Amino acid sequence: MSDAREQLIACLPRLRRYARALTGDRTRADDLVQDTVERAWRHLASWRSDGDMRAWLFGIMHNVHVDQLRRPHLQTEALDDTLPDARAISQADLTLDEMARALRALPDEQREVLLLVVLEDMQYDEVAALLNVPIGTVMSRLSRARQRLKVYREGGPQVPALKVIK
Image 1: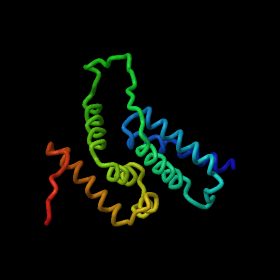
Image 2: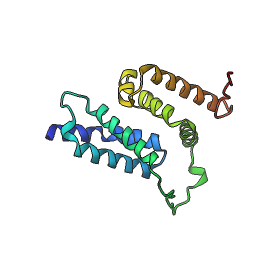
Image 3: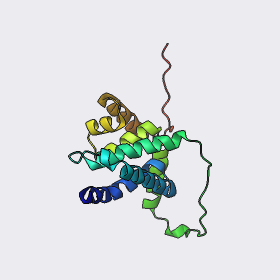
Image 4: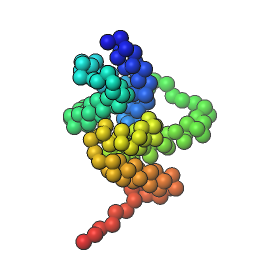
């Protein structure tokens, strides 16, 4: 039990990073991580000790996130009492903000695959197993996500035009 606890704790930074990128909001990301860890702790007996704890936790996080998206919720906005100094905003901050905006513009399915492959350095087969989709779907979603980000970066339309085939 102690070994599993240590492995779970070791995965927290990656869970937080993925949740933050997935939700685009620090508060929602913290809630997602908390819900994920809570569910994982309750079902720790179902985790195979010879398996990859990280993949198991990311699977739980994916399911919790999907559940949260399906559940109707009250839209809230965090209050910030401090105003940033306009001179203190660096070019790197603007670039990160633009990247976050571009990621939020992606459909959930594409954003999830992109973040798991690029940010979490997971293999295609791991992502396919995690999301319960064929590996070809993972590659397709990743390709479409990269293409949309490229179009976004080049200043084109956020969503490439779709062809109508009759």
